Image 1 (cartoon, rainbow, N blue to C red):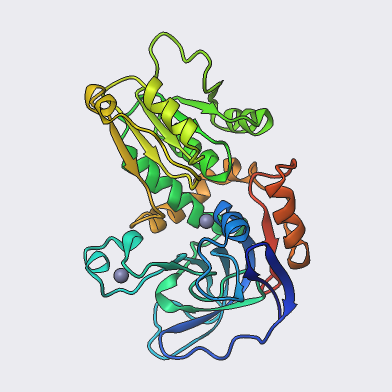
Image 2 (cartoon, helix red, strand yellow; image 1 turned 45 degrees about the vertical axis):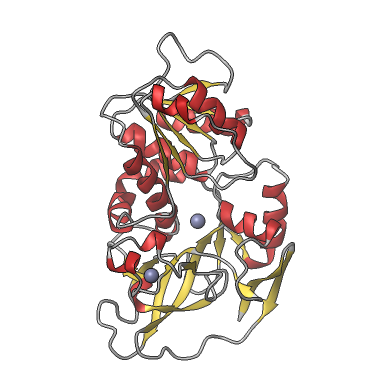
Length: 334
Ligand SMILES: [Zn+2]
Ligand SMILES: [Zn+2]
């Protein structure tokens, strides 16, 4: 079958590989319909930061149709449409036992720890697939995982209803965070160096555009979610946010932040990291139907597997394109 594999930093290849074998006990074979390219896929390609085995079929955001199930698999059956949980958990460490899979001591992700979804088919642990709700198209299901990440960040921020929220970074996660905040009645202020992306997200959520060093109004918001991971952005937010609120970090960036902790103390401000998601995947899937019009504005027609390396290049070069690139993987009609 056709697959896109990461061989090393900067080395992504479209190849012919063996189709996965029939599922063993506790496994499910999924024909992949649509997969999404994530910012973390690009980060791993550029830096090799999370390469734990190579080559590996990339891709942790995808949806498709069950082709076969192994022994002891009862919650899905051949023919079912499914979405995928990207977290590859040990299930036995203290964090897993406490229901904190996002900080599992042995945490890996599908596409790195095991072969992922940029292929016609993927062999997955049964616990990583969930049956899709009726009528929700693959193009939404392929965004369920990112929506869960965004929902985790919004949940961790705990902004009160109606409190304005700044979102820095208008990539896919920034857009989804903004969509979720707006949905709960929080006015959203959007900051991104890319004016086109910022305007698109502002239009989708009815938000206000702003500059990192510009005018935030007489009473600056107390809450923000950073999706850039850029120390200068995070430092500026800590400096400029109103007191008594918080800043949630969900971006993966680079570099160190010089931080005077007294600032957090005096501003009575929380700084929370947000990694992947905890139990937010099922609630995110349940929201997909409602959010369909907004989510559809983040995507374009899917590309095919052969076009993935070029799509990585374009995204890393910051060339214009849809916020979320979807790939038609050929395992089921998209
Ligand atoms: Zn992702
Ligand atoms: Zn664990």
